[in-house]
Length: 273
Length: 252
Image (cartoon, rainbow over all chains, first blue to last red; front, side, top):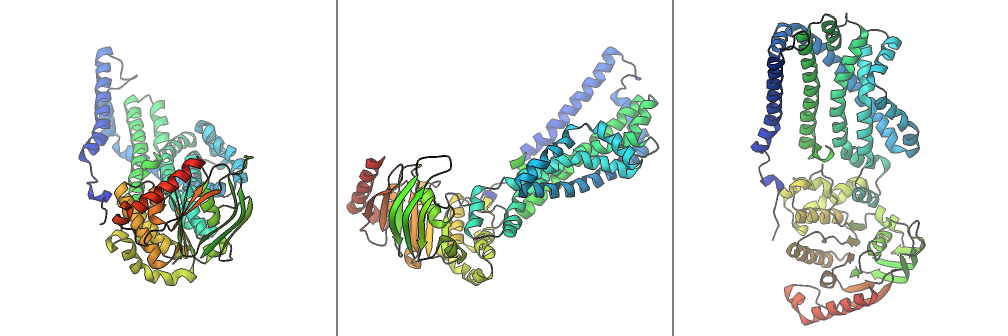
């Protein structure tokens, strides 16, 4: 007699969970906007200090062309920074995973990337490498590097002891253990690191644009211009787009990463959340 | 395959007390031997030393006059772990042929036998296309069993492989492993704390005493080679179970 019990026999899609996953954040947003509007009605605060949601919505529509152009520019800088930090971070993590001496020697310097504020790093980079798109991407790279290094290092080192014994039992070479065990095992951690880095890369690009100058297109420069002109509704609209960009980056990487893990590796991000 | 253990002693780092102390022991020669003992008595450590996964502090293990490493390299040694240890990103089939991939060309020929192997362990072609997460615990253990047999080993070492399974499934797999042992004539060593399991599967049961672990009792299981449910319910079976239980009580 054969035992059954395939987990795929059960429906994978839980509509109730999806409704909660999407509905709950939307409910929070609706409540926050309603509260915001109510606060303005009750206190009568000046639009120069706090614009209403309605005014911000109007500014979003009015400035849509500039906002889309600025968001695109910031996205490009963040994506280039993220791609570079992914490559550099994975290579660094690989070096860390191969030698405890290398790890102990250089890990404190990797932590520096996380502890030094981006607001301090950005002007140094802009002054050192000059004003321009490349400096913005560089700030984004530096600020998004740490999550990738730490997550990938953890993934490469946290290998199931039973799997390691299995490979030892079959006299696996160093290369086989790396290629057939360590790298696939660490994939969920790498994806988790990239999605955290994705949100951070957007912040890095925006802060970088602050220091590159207002002539540069991008959300950071746009925020600076709107703040200087006291255009509060437009400033709020730019901040909203910046926030949306960070969330979109995080969500898109999560969706693509989860799909790749599930489709090609039968794995999920849930273990490393 | 004959396993010869000589003057074996093992002490873990930081401990002054020897965990294992076995002056001389001969196992194998196509027989099924179980080692029973209390938790932490050193059963799994002994099995890992036989497999060459752990180097003993002192002493020597010889498998047909060769080192465990040499036998592992030749694919003649299989080890079934407590958990199935399947790679979650590989399908069942990819997990089964993993030893052949790792051990290179000299074992690639054996992949051709995979279809016969599937029927031997009770897996269908459809099962082999699934990933471990899509299989039940029992099916995962069958895949693990198929993986251990793909290299056509001469010695099969098992470290409490059925501990996590329910009673019915455990008995089914015990019977199947016993059948495979008889059909393939593989020397087998099982480590377990389940006395009925040890008696049901083995030709010989060794009782391991505590601190330092040593063989205190060697019980020959004089039962028919085929262990069906009638054998399990027989007076002789119960008598051997009682004998092993008494021996274990004396050392715990």
